[in-house]
Amino acid sequence: MALPFVVTLRGYDMCQVESLFAEVDGALATDSAVLRAAARDALRAATLRRRIRGYASRDVDAAIAQRLAALAHPGTPSGPTRPPAIMTVPFVVTLRGYDMRQVESLFAEVDEAVAADSAVLRAAARDALRATTLRRRLRGYACRAVDDAVAERLRTL
Image (cartoon, rainbow, N blue to C red; front, side, top):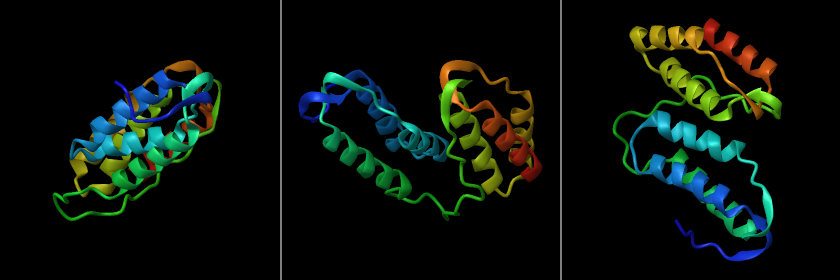
């Protein structure tokens, strides 16, 4: 996939940018609040590597801001919109932390259940939190902060 960014010296890694925007654009094409929240969190948590030859950082940063705005305001409301009950904690990225995508998708699902009025969704989210074993990666979210956020979400549910 070729994105309409200028290729410059010392720009963002093209493969990394393309995979990030593929995920985000896929979420923008759906009405799923979970996918949109995961995409929004992925954009906020993205730390793009620089390469000798890559996409111009100003263009990419502007596109990220545009996509964040689009994810915050869905084009066609499918029902009454409620503010999320809990904002996802911006975790610190460390060496040897929890898998970022797994954590983001788990918290997006849980935050959607917290915002819902359904006891069934809340119970399912509570069970998912208790049953999930988070994978560790070379680069991931700080384990202690994620564990504390999981405990907080369990108290909320």
